[in-house]
Length: 197
Image 1: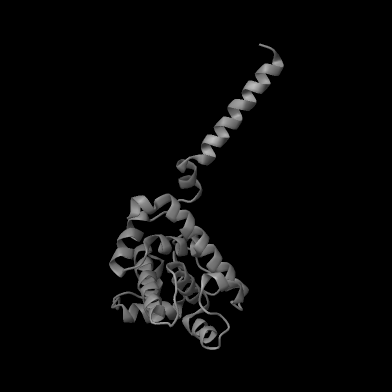
Image 2: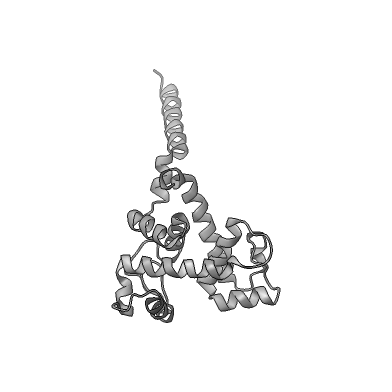
């Protein structure tokens, strides 16, 4: 076999391998893993939250690193702010826990799931027709910017709370955050929805 033919053969094999990898679900799992999968599934079910949405929030917030803390002192997997954490611990009946316990993955996920359910409930009664992704956009925006700020935007007509109009959200950080959450949600839905239903 000539050297040119060998090079062509290797090129075809290489391209075939790359195409097979990129079209396989295996590569998707490698690029978009979900850590704490069992905990997220169980806790999301307990609190009536979409587990893939919760996983997308965790991915964007901490990339599944339980000991992460932000410059603003947000803690753990779901990057819960101390004030929010104290309030949720009280409201959710986790009174035996302290704010420092929020680095423990299970408590952090429970606290975050309780808060996500709270935010979902807060926006359920809004006027106007909204898709599931619109509701996710609202909840993700409130998780990032705070529910008071999102309520202000809605009341003042700055943003109508829909995914299609995210460009109207006045905080660039929040716009970017919601886009990222919805991006990971879409990836997780494509990869995991069948197994997680």
